[in-house]
Image (tube, rainbow, N blue to C red; front, top):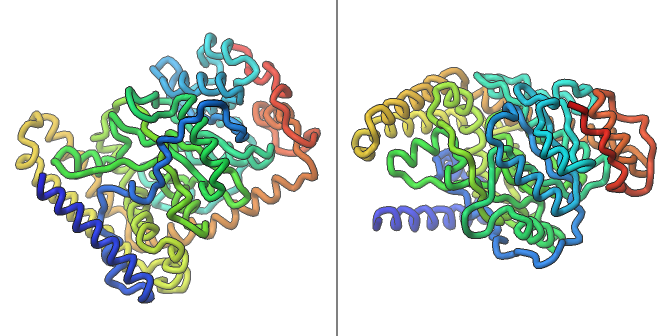
Length: 455
């Protein structure tokens, strides 16, 4: 216990020393070496607004609650039910974006009947490609390595809708979350409190609820917990309220796409340490984090996101300048930085494998074998990409932000706002954006029950 306390104090002192050095010295290589080391928590970067529970409905404009689904509706999906409850209480749209095993025709009829015209079901696989831009990050090795996931693109669709329809806020929820048993959580009071806080604090760009009880960590994080190491939980797309301004970034196609989204959100602001908030906790359905396939699909994205988050914590407003300043070609971090990051991850994985039998004697033998097998899969996956691949990914990720902003500017070139029903019907029917009628302001009642396809 004492050792953990001392470790936390040393880590806190190191961060303060790094901040002081950054203020007076131009990014010494020593600080970049510190930034590749894994950190158990990034919670200190979040503003705590968890006590802000509104007694009445906020006047903030919540455009929709957006839930991406790829699992069959026959499974238990508590997040879908909670999202429906919030949508009904808030009298806002619930947009359920379906793909893969989630078929529109299988949506629970009782839930559809309760929501009526507030429910919009979309078949993402039928979406016209012109709704979203072609981003180069999706073609890179770090994105495609052992991974086939469309959650980032689905969330980007919600951001596009928000810009077209003039929505101020969008609440992203995963289908496997539910309210926490105690403490501040994502119930209607917590949502109203978060909305009102964001309305009053214009600097706040996103507020999240951490997925705990069964923690929302990568394989790497779950393995750290299994061997008795400290491991925190950060906010993510599973329960995230976003301000949809003109410079809102995009969710890339990679593991930890939500981290890269909030990193870009903070990095492009004048006050990075004052734009992300923590509003409480939600529960997450338990799953098996120690699958080799999961380990392989997470390794590249987890390495990138952890290192970029460290840089954001250390450099704040100078984050973008550091990426450019330390570039071998004037565009991005030198591959040497990522080489150290990859080497550090492999060393940590080997230590965890060896610590399993020593620090986790109470774990069943079969459980230790599963964890060890998954960690070995992660280590092998790290040899399938090089430092240059990660450096290239970050460079293209930054350039794609420009493509994304241009796409938003192009798709929102309207003198007045379109009628929501027309926009959503275009989406439902797989049509390209444009050609809809226009009114000065979106009207909730304009969305009819016909947007829910008949079963």
